[in-house]
Length: 269
Image 1 (cartoon, helix red, strand yellow):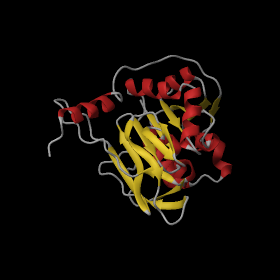
Image 2 (cartoon, rainbow, N blue to C red):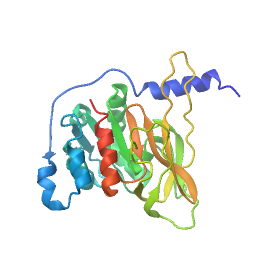
Image 3 (cartoon, helix red, strand yellow):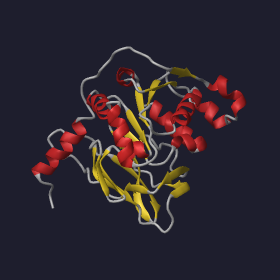
């Protein structure tokens, strides 16, 4: 059945937010500039060391501090591959960075409350409107969807993607440990990582991704969706122009996670 005009319009509205006018200002709060040399004695592998020089220029990355997520782990992982990392709750700093990382652990509703407290939904929306890259991690990915249902409580998300975060139908929860992923064809984020495993810690996920192909006169790219399985098949990663996300923790996924972060850094202007 051909998609309706309304369906096509909805697709375009959601995806068009990830394109547009750029924003730029200059205010810095707390910065941690760490490179390979700072980590020679910290068990850095040769594979990761090789990645440091593979990024064109030093990318400024803000890790959004809204009271949730493995902030320092994310900071260290990004610094290991050559990024200039700032952990911040300051809106302007988050807007100015080349890339914004939104981590997250815990309950969906609590993460959304924390995100709203630092104006996170507006920050994410403004960055995407200017085509400025954003990477969500774990619950930081989940809150990008329409809503989350946990313990009978239905909480509204950022609504960048359609979909519901709900408990996985699996014999063992949480889903904790290493798992393979079914990489989306043409993925940039997972380039060279098609046979790798990544580290997951979660009980909830998105089992259906409904944002399809744009059929308008000037079609926008279809999102690339990577999947994984644990009892259920669930979304493990999404690449949608400036907005990307992973359900797993790249900062805890060893060399494979470092390569993924490097791939993301290489998409930053």
